[in-house]
Amino acid sequence: MIDVIIVGAGPAGLSAANVCAKNGLKVKVVDEFMKAGGRLLGQLHEEPDGTWWNGIEEAKKLSEDAQELNVAVECGVSVHNIKQEKSYWKVYTTKGDFKTRALLLATGAAETSLPIPGWTLPGVMSIGAAQVMTNVHRVRVGERGVVIGINILSAAITRELQLAGIEVSSMYLPGKNIVTEDAAKPLSTMKSMLKVASLAPSKLIRLGSYFMKYESLQSLAVRFYPKNGMKVWGMPVHLRKAVLEIVGDKKVEGVKVAQVDVNGEPILSTEKFVPADFVCIAGGLYPLVELAAISGCPFQYIAELGGHVPVHNENMKTPIDGLYVAGNITGIESAKVAMKQGAVAGYSISMDLLKTDVNIEDQLQQAINHVKQTRNQATIQFHPDIHSGREKIHASFKNTLRTDI
Amino acid sequence: MRDHKTIICRCEEVSLEDLVRTAESYRCSSRELKLRTRAGMGQCGGRTCRALVDSITQKCTNDSTPHDIPLGYQAPIRPITFSIMGEKKDE
Ligand SMILES: Cc1cc2nc3c(=O)[nH]c(=O)nc-3n(C[C@H](O)[C@H](O)[C@H](O)COP(=O)(O)OP(=O)(O)OC[C@H]3O[C@@H](n4cnc5c(N)ncnc54)[C@H](O)[C@@H]3O)c2cc1C
Image (cartoon, each protein chain N blue to C red):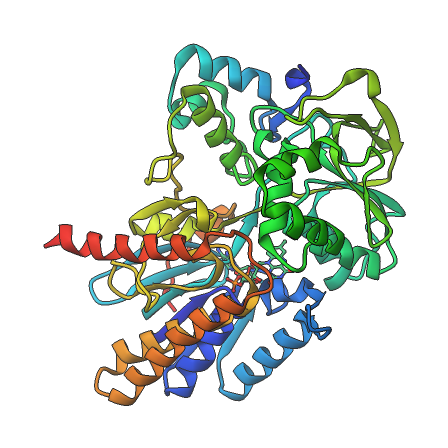
């Protein structure tokens, strides 16, 4: 029997593992990717104070600590099922089945797609795939591409592609259909870009802080948004142009682009062909909750957290005995928040398994405060109302317990 | 407009047009939409189209998103071989 199994070797999972191991627990981490670090491995961006966030370095630090603490980290292993038995969890993996007293799910997030005609052609990929190819595998995704979907994630990754010497000729909205609707509206796209972060293209922000104050100015800004886009890092960002179709014979050869009205409806007479040999689609992120869903854990739909999330409290405990969650599975936030949440889960598990130690309780409280501080200072925020989302999910945990009695 | 050309489920090749037409005629749940069109029933297990199918259902029926996950998950949550599934060994 293992004390703790952690699914996911991202910032949340590794941080939790290290805390558990420091407290003397026997820990095993499994991850289906071939390298530990989760989404950290792709991250490289400049903070507003001019320092750089280098995810590969952060992942390396976490992995080295894990190694020193004798945490067993196994990569290339998928967990395909989990079951609660009387006093333990059974974890089914592609390399054997294991019993554990506590189970932490730190499976991170998945990407939402934006389906438009031609998106199944070779050469079309999610923006996250482009990030992994560029920063992890060091493979060139193409010579000259376009990005569809304007949001905080695509802005950050497009910049990474540029830094790697890959040309992105433009960023566009997706052509509007029933599924892409929300991402296809110029005004709501602009608003969300203005709110989310300092990482957002700086010019948009500068323009934005002025327009932010006045609702009426925002729609004016969209109405008079330059036809040739606004240049950010030398690349035009088009809030008034959408990709209606991706075209190519056996692979991507380009995109059909048209101007759109303020509601995102295309003006067909303006349709033009723009050549490209790769296309990145960026529809945003949602918590990856598959394992929590088959565990029988109750769920809440909370838009501010990115979708359906397993019910849990500030200690990262679910209402199910021995089942914990941390990181993006609990809501979409930056890697720094995920790390702090992982530490909370680590203390929480240690306290439950070791029971007696009062010391851990103080550390747990401190770790919870660190999550809040980090959240307040976050430069990357995926949703402007993250705080209210957190309050809602914690309240739902209390309600779940109440109805159980 | 171009919905017949927009594939939603790659594995089963179901278009946006098919899904919207079915959702509008039957005003059905995501699960029923899946069973009627086979969207999400291919070999990837709906890992790409699940969220899209859910959003089509919601928009066509004008429902708000329920707290329970509309399209349930079932183990195994990854495609695995029969030999892995049949394995009886513990630890
Ligand atoms: C494409 C993409 C780009 C992002 N870019 C940024 C960015 O630039 N800056 C930022 O702050 N945040 C970014 N994020 C948000 C990111 O999710 C967090 O920064 C952080 O990595 C979340 O940490 P985590 O530990 O919760 O999950 P992750 O880092 O995602 O780690 C989860 C791990 O779980 C593993 N896993 C999942 N399911 C299973 C299973 N069934 N069996 C075995 N292993 C499994 C995965 O392989 C993965 O390694 C990005 C997210 C994505 C998806």
